[in-house]
Amino acid sequence: MKSGLGEIVVQPARVKEVSKWRRGLKKTWPLHMMILPATIIAIVFHYLPILGLVMAFQDYKPWLGFLKSDWVGLKHFESLFMFEDSVQVIWNTLIISVLKIVCGLFVPIVIALLLNELRKEGIKRSIQTLVYLPHFLSWVILGGILIDLLSVKGGIVNRMLVDWFGMQPIFFLGDGDWFRFVIVVSDIWKEFGFAMIIYLAAIAGVNPALYEAAEVDGATRMQQTIHVTLPVMLPIIVVVATLQLGNVLNAGFDQIFNLYNPLVYDKGDVIDTFVYRSAMLKGDFSFATAVGMFKSIISFVLIIVSYRMAYRFGNYRIF
Image (cartoon, rainbow, N blue to C red; front, top):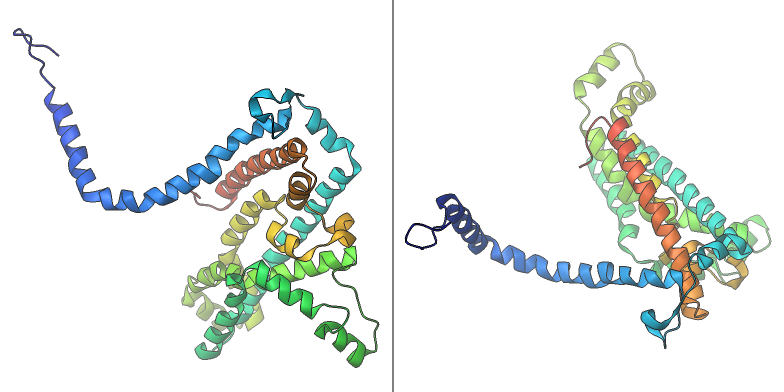
């Protein structure tokens, strides 16, 4: 505001706010600098590529670019549901991801309950460490290991089946049904140890007085697990289960890409690998973008629904 002499007078409250902001920035600028690289990476690799979604509505040609490529509207989205291959890919994704979610929820709970029954802390911690380790290995490494282990010629698994049980070798990575089995089992083996941490934390929060009261009433260890441990774990189980709903269309690109081959495309090809092959191998960038955009929209809706369900049934806020 201006005074009678024409001078500009800044309100005291505004001066205090600006000075407070500057003092705070002087104290926290190292933290801002630390987060700056991550912010730049997020902008470059996560936000700028969003502009490329325009290809889903164009007959995109790399040599013409976004501005000169012809617009085709929803043509590629219509093709998504007309082509037999794309429909099969959606079904493959749903089947594999649902199996992973269900088994990946059940196995960590069971193993956590079994570990809770161990009384020797040394053995308990050793087992926990061993089951955690596969989580930290990439699928590039594990994929090579699995290919060697499951090889028809010389693979240790097939050698055991032939020598010990007199069975014929199984083409695990060349038969569609066996391929799905390998994908689900290997994913559970890799991730159940890490997923088990949250359930062990929930079990650690159980009041020991509840076990003592149940023991006084004559409850066995199994009855204590069913009537004491599981009810305490139930809110966490509900939250984890509902949050997994957002991963229904995420069947695991890294894993499948490192293990699949043309022999199992009919049973093992999922949306992410289909998008990769359509764009990078066939050069159909517009159709691949439309498929990826379809998946992103559905996943976004499912994430919102899962968070609201977790908030409603988990008895506490997620955020």
